[in-house]
Length: 114
Length: 117
Image 1 (cartoon, rainbow over the protein chains, first blue to last red):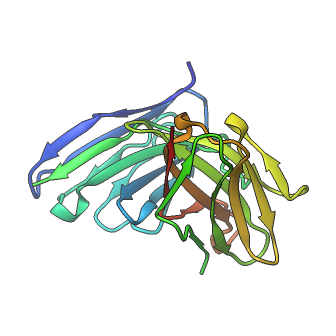
Image 2: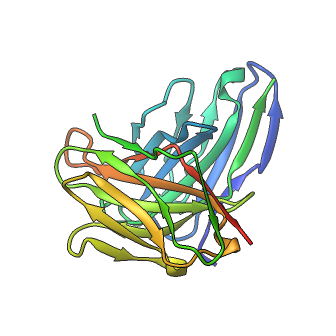
Image 3: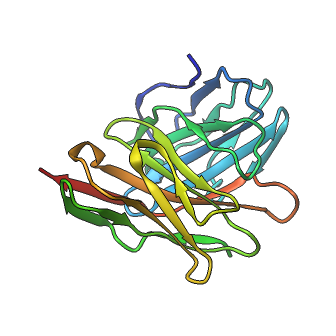
């Protein structure tokens, strides 16, 4: 089944403890991206990747890192999480990152930073 | 700066009545507009998109959207609402980010649609 898989589904951590949220897609998509969803703010793009080893900042990249060493994986790294990073995170992918392509989303990761 | 706005936080309609969820945008050049839906405890699903051509776009689950360039709007519509349509709806626009990349994507704030039996 074609899908975008995020792990974990839920994560509770403490301030300053490094964490990684994994994202993997099995559709051979070149484009992948990360979003955070907050009430009243909708989804905001954190980082995106047009292809392997090509990443760029979205609208809210501060406090986050990403890497794209393989086409299928696009992990989101929080080196020193803070409470304001408590949010619902989504990974998404599309075929080549062209303007007319729809996104395929993962099921989300609910992160709580205490 | 490019932006998308959904002026209504919530929309309430009775089952069987037509529904409209509003979206306006601001983007230089030609916009590439999308609607996504989020059901409770699930990821977002694609509904429909406007790229070029007919201003009325048809999508999944009986939804359609009307692109209006003069009003810079892309409202989502359905002739007869179902209780199962109750969900969170997002409008989104894709645009060039300084060069040739269409990597940046901007979403609206979201509109909660509630359809009452």
